Image 1: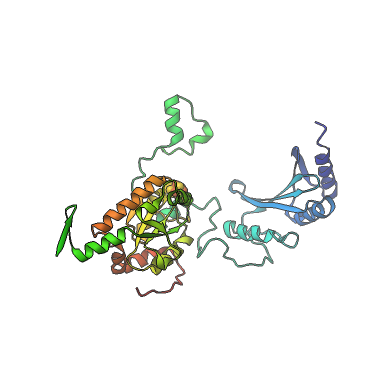
Image 2: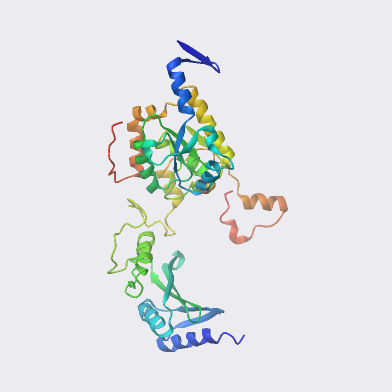
Length: 191
Length: 183
Ligand code: SF4
């Protein structure tokens, strides 16, 4: 596997420039984990020096067990056709992240969405607080401690008739005699 | 003078009125959810809904039937209510897909309503996820039967029970900035 040269190169440059962790995931995919204060400099470096000019996506993952949000910046370079993923963790309490919409204008949209769906604040972010949801006054709904079933039960009218709904996985394993894996048991409907 | 058809007795004026209404259903399709994809085959040559006098209308004020084709986000519920209130009498609602009946597979979602008839009166429900064009047409035929028998008076029911509907609607649409229509 010597053809990962471009990937290794970019990983090494960023590693030496910023002293961060990272790895080559596979062909055309490099992943870097950095402290949140380094993010904008890494993004600028990658954009200006290595032609990662395209922002694919900014995503957020709620690691409620660790009390943290993970923010992933996914950028792409049209010259090497390589994807670079830059990960950072921020605390769930008073979640705050640097606003990067001066690097890519379209980051504004993703950041507004994260502000609404996860309650992450981006100081200096321009745009209405209300983005997709209308008249929302509960906890940001994409946080994992938001119980959607409970909210739906109290807000909307549940029509009776779902009580005997069966769990597809359980029904199938009963028929085939297969074991349900341990990790899947906690999602069981038969409590 | 009355006329009896299918064991239903009606004054002749009403009979003619209903007969005309049931043969020209102008449909405003509110294409929400996945079900909207079944509307083009229903309307075009394969199933040709125009055989039954069913055809599209451009605006709410020209339409007789409001067709809701799937789950309604709380946000689109607001638009649906406005559209429904703009429609002229006689007006009917056909709700389409299990999402409008009991939430379907989005029953635990934080932003889709579960039972449409709490917010606007529904004349015919078509179940299925999603219903095929045959089912859609059979739903329309069911509506035509209701119209012919003089039982499709849901728009009046809405006016009479407006407070109950408003209460349910305002539970979802907290910031009520809607025009009042005087029908
Ligand atoms: S009933 Fe099924 S097809 Fe229709 S909107 Fe709901 S999920 Fe989609």
